[in-house]
View 1: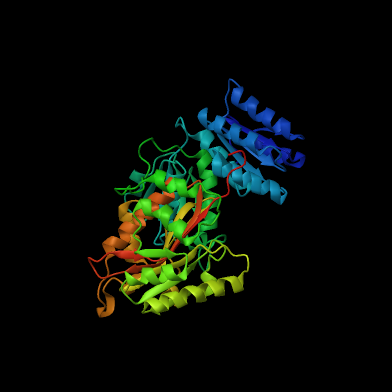
View 2 (view 1 turned 90 degrees about the vertical axis):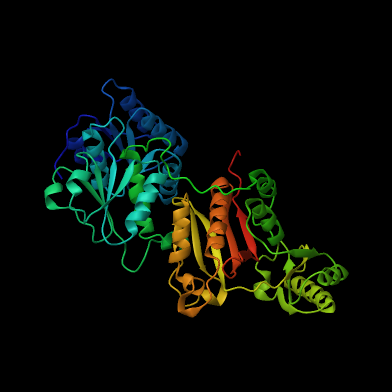
Length: 486
């Protein structure tokens, strides 16, 4: 790589042996103490010849909050701060990436990436950095990359690499992100441009959480976005994608449930937290005695389902905490005693809230809807088959939040489990509109409580015939631990 002009670039390193390597690329500074790293960044931001981009090669990180504050200050001043961890202890590396999630800090994966970022920002004539142009091939990874870029607040656009008018679409100072293993840029357009690539690893997505693994190239996209976040142009206000806002939601009612002491809510509490968002649950009665269960059964249509309700037994005793096909009042009484005895055998000190009695809901198919928060990607929505219905199907597809209604409709139509509810193979079609509406309401819940909820699982959700709606028969909400000092 050819050295770039020093104008607008300041490079700071904690590795003394890196000084000669960095010298041709910028004003090199060796910082033996971390305090001098902060001092060097402060000086670069305060200098009359203000740096457009500051690259920092770090060996350690003792003050993550201070680095985050400097990154935000650089962004506000129209500069960029990009860090490269080099031979850094694992705990310090984790702290650096935590700062990158919350502040305008880019993290480069290699020295070449760091220097590319510096060159791009320094050469840009734009006041707040270049636009990110994502050139896609035939693989769908580009869409995930574009959505992540928008979520990070970047001015990003998705471009079809097969478009013959590509030269008219690309700006002279755009960062070109080639998304997918087959994405190509015509040779005539390559000279003088900064080009990065997001490839999909062979055999699937990235590592990390199962949800992240389902995001095509998840780990590599995260690394790339951390870099683009620092050097790319911010997205104009008011143009970010918005999640759907269904009618009739009551955030305050849900918040009152979530602010309790439990980290994982029991089934009744989970349903009380989700009901204000219009998630459709069937009629059920929490019985606290055998006689109460018998009385409840009198007003219900058999066959009934009985489930143990305990915050200490959230897995329902691996299926042994659920009894089905209860057809009489005496059966409800017997089920109550059986479930309580089984719960206390499994855990003598278990807190027993009672036994939930509900009518059996029949439908076209049973699905599982999961919202899980990834520390880098944010909330992800997964749609798959419930229980045995999910066996043998491809991995559950993932939708990033925020999402539009069109995204939700596409998820419902494209999920592998759709073959069981979309009328395929002569089956009766299910209520796809009601399923999409339920997912949209879960998206709204995840968006509103993105800082306090880590996971929501609706399993199973019974998809009934077209026009008859859907019913979630079980739910679990996991609440994030409170932030220190919060």
